[in-house]
Amino acid sequence: MEILPGLSDYKEIVGKKYIEQLYHLASFTKGKKVIMVNSTRTGGGVAEILHRLIPLINELGIECHWKIINGDNGFFKITKNIHNALQGNRICFSREELEYYLEINRKNSKDIDLDADIVVIHDPQPLPIINFYNSQNAKWVWRCHIDLSKPDLALWKHLRNYINQYDASIFSISKFSRKLPHRQFLILPSIDPLSDKNKDLSQEKISEVLESFNIKNDRPIILQVSRFDRFKDPAGVIEAYRLVKKEINCQLILAGGVASDDPEGLEVLEEVRTAAGSDPDIHILLLEPDSNIEINALQRAADVVIQKSLKEGFGLVVSEALWKEKPVVGGAVGGITTQIKNYHNGFLVYSIEGAAYRIRYLLNRPHMAKIMGRHAKMFAHENFLITRHLRDYLSLFIILYSGNKNIIHA
Ligand code: UDP
Image (cartoon, rainbow, N blue to C red; front, side, top):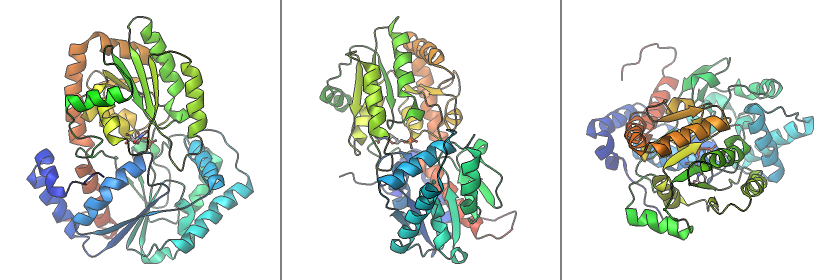
């Protein structure tokens, strides 16, 4: 089992002063209790973040708990459709479905004690739970991680009845914010540079992982790591790889798993297997939920990392790759656009052909890819580390209790 690092371990990365500042900010919220709620402990970026963030908030002296709502397959099918509709798919929801969504949240409210000073509800699955608590006694915050740039408006209108009950919302980028009756905050997600997923690995370990998957490092590797989800466009990645392959003898790794709150995963995996056909240079890896070292090694072994999403709240995998000095070719959508700067640390692309063109560009110019890789790490260091994320949450906690003050002296 992974031993979690403590706050002092981050001094070597961000400096002693930064950690002292975190303790100072936390001192304003001492004695308050925080609860974070989402719908899965494994799979996907939210679980990834909460695993690391919550222990560190506790270490800073703020009591912070993580609670998970339960649901059956029917519930998660509805919430996956809600997720898809919020990301722009046109889906009609029946009255029964919306009632079931609410009903499961009502059931959860009986089982989960959310007695706290600050309650942070992540994403749409547990969103309506606020309906069943006396929210007057605490500050309630809805943290939306998904790409809300073009939501289905009928659904949004319905969900707004719940969102309006919150004291504040958090979005990842300004493009996702909507008209709401409360304060909205922008907080970028983050990666943990000391986790098994991101810590330094020896060349031996990287080779060992490749061998365990029967992959030879004898030709350039293009990699996409993500849940098997249509918004991540794995089929588009295969097409882009085929265009590249016409000129460069390369291989493609599509590595991913399924999340317990995502019932579509296995179906999409089958589609991907069919699209890959019998090409021995396409490696489709179905990973266990705790394959952190494996993902770390694959990202380090890759020559180009791709994240060709069609919609993306943030895309932690992009930051993970940047941190490992990899230039990333990413779909020009949602949170990916805040992480990739053209010619600096990767390329934003708008089509399969565009993705292929940029992958070829990087594979044909290893020297340039190396320079961009160095920029990539610096950019991730400045913007996407967990220490910055902690600072943002601590500042939010202070603001929640500051009334209408415009200036807060910290
Ligand atoms: N991930 C993982 N196993 C997998 C696929 C993804 O551990 O099989 C991790 C990945 O490394 C990243 C997170 O899950 O840390 C995915 O976050 P992201 O924001 O990229 O996408 P999401 O799944 O939340 O849409």
